[in-house]
Image (cartoon, rainbow, N blue to C red; front, side, top):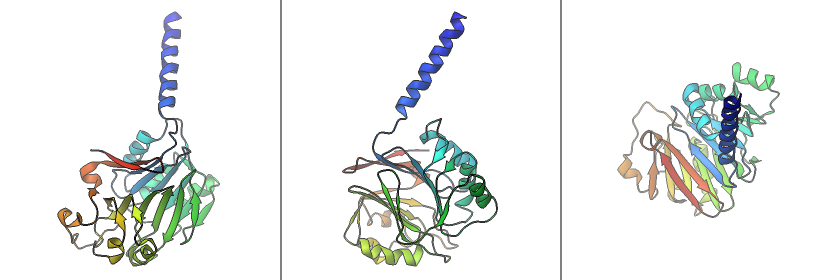
Length: 261
């Protein structure tokens, strides 16, 4: 009995230690997860989590989410689906089987299992619309543009005090929306690898770092090499080279770390 009680005490102590280490730290975390397709996880300063898209592979996403979410966490503040396409939807469906979002936002409402899961969890579903602002628990998510065409999805801006993270999936409509940000400092731009880098709106931004995603796919190869892309920002990242790309900000200063695959 004493030995059993001893092991139970050790187990409880280990769980308490893990819970203490995984408590909210009052900072903004934006993580471009190293999954096939696009998946971005946001942890707000208050400690809530928001998932943007989800990638192609539910198993890959489950492993990635398990790395960053506390083991007891089964709720999300929100899920965002910038486009209901093969590179975004399967992973999000897998996440929705395990985590219950308080709110779901989608540019085009998927039918079938996605909608069935939302209905079964009684999760409010809203369309993504330009001009929306969502409080993520200390940070704010702005929807700058949406695009229902074939050349992109939504353009999102995450703000936490002086820190700005821009997620550009929005094609030509998104490029036009960037004009309003001309001259502003963007701590991290998440930008599709295969989209052109010659867009004038990008040159008008003060970019500190760019993380390239697979958020846009085309039959043609990418037009610019990694060397040519260095004109965009001092620091460039890609999940295939750097693994998880993790921005952390206290609202004044942002740092980026990577976890190589």
